Length: 145
Image 1 (cartoon, one colour):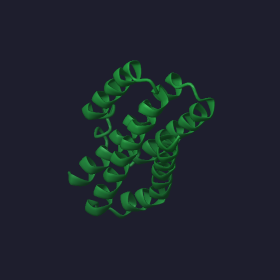
Image 2: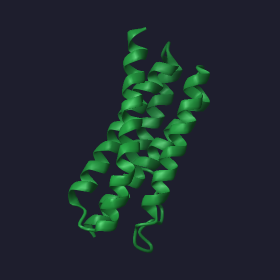
Image 3: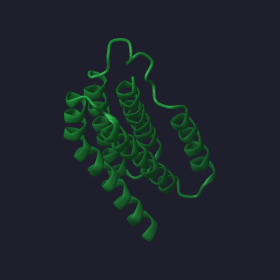
Image 4: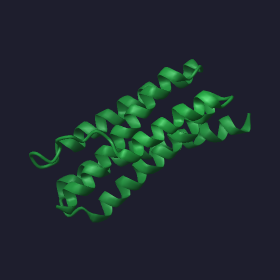
């Protein structure tokens, strides 16, 4: 079931991003970033919920992110504890998480044969791309200060 497997990867990447944004919002000092990260987490959850509804019965069980997402999250916490700028560490790694979401979207869009799946992916892709661009801009701004 290539469509279901690819779609599951998108949902897993979205779950990774959601969890990572929630953790980052709880860890960083900048209140404007905290609010943005909470909104980004909510967006990830909304998109994941829509996509999960397209999975065949039983295929959505145990989607809880990816092992790479869990490793990156642990790495972020370790770096933040050791680093001097915790916010910058989270911003860098969140931008990388956005890269994974966009890659998963593109992979699924390029392989899916189901019109309904394609329609939902295409409807949410601009939101995913906007989140990616927002984090890229934040990273660029953070590194210039």
